[in-house]
Image (cartoon, rainbow, N blue to C red; front, side, top):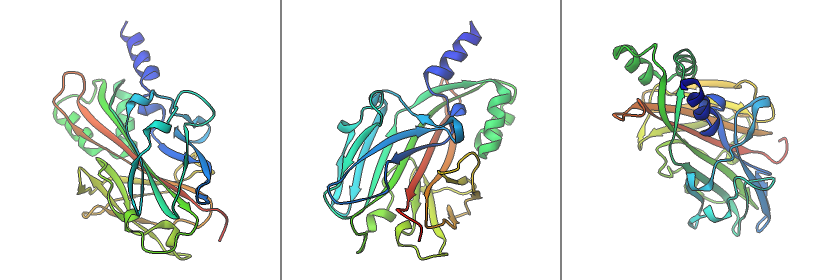
Length: 270
């Protein structure tokens, strides 16, 4: 009975162990004004990549942020039908930030698998808590939720666009300190990682080349001010992701874990 329940949790709730990486994948990262672009909500990596496929009522926020403000776009999502998860069209030029936030789901994993996941992702709060509580050999129980942003260039990106480098209010957020589309050749992309609105130190941030993402291209730890930087080639499609967790007082789970990503891409080699 216990094994059956575990399988149901893993398959029915989309356990993060089956797909740590999660991101918004537009069909194109550079589009014209008014041009519709299909997008998908993807989980996994390498050959295990697939559409997220959860009911839309799990999506608490799906919005587009531009220089003129934020608009709710949840109505365009159809996560369990069609060849994509929705289409967006942008009426103004510039870089548009597409933001997603999901509600929580429960995951339960055997101790060995959970401990390995915590180590690989650098989730020190959970490792420390389990050791102090004598729970290292117990099943890992967590509520997890997802946050994602993608940057879509519409028409020309000329002009000041401070909304690209501002926090959007996500619980765990990757905030670029420069617009990736404005970087010069060889210039590093500086990032600020925020957790509950505060700089997060000691978090593992990974850079993935979405054209070949079986393994991260690079990974770094945030410094004491929550900052980290990566050299990102100005070609191809890219994703950055980070995970963080905190102990909670709940009869069903010991941790609240958040997955967050930022994706962007370039139209052609530069």
